[in-house]
Image 1 (tube, rainbow, N blue to C red):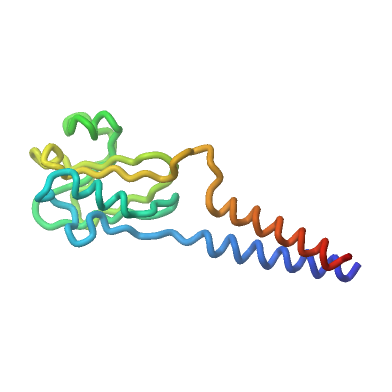
Image 2 (tube, rainbow, N blue to C red):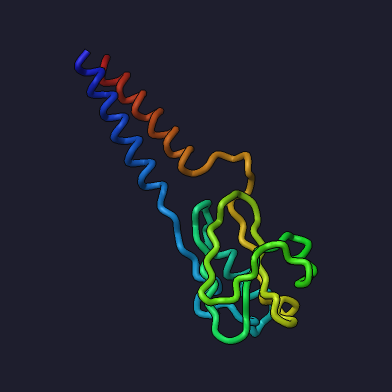
Length: 157
């Protein structure tokens, strides 16, 4: 019986470690050194930047700029058409502007100043490829539980 409590305590410690290690959010400086401005090469600059990132729920995007810019989270149709007159979200006009990624899927951001969006000052960031897929944290936790069960079976034989 005492061995059973040891296994349970071990499982609790391992699960807590997995949860704590998987719960850290990342901070992403949008555009890195480019920051948030009309990119010299058009929208490809922010697409390339976003493709190199690993976005997770809870991560924070930081839009940092100087000069006359802003940022707002928008729908895909507004993003695609750069329709800056019908934005629904709150336009952030003070740098730095922070947005926390709170759901799987693609999140769209544009600058509403003049023609900045048309000239490429927009970025789409995607969390996960499939909203029905298990999160990395859930998959890791499941693997740890299976390993611990297999280990306890071997040690009790």
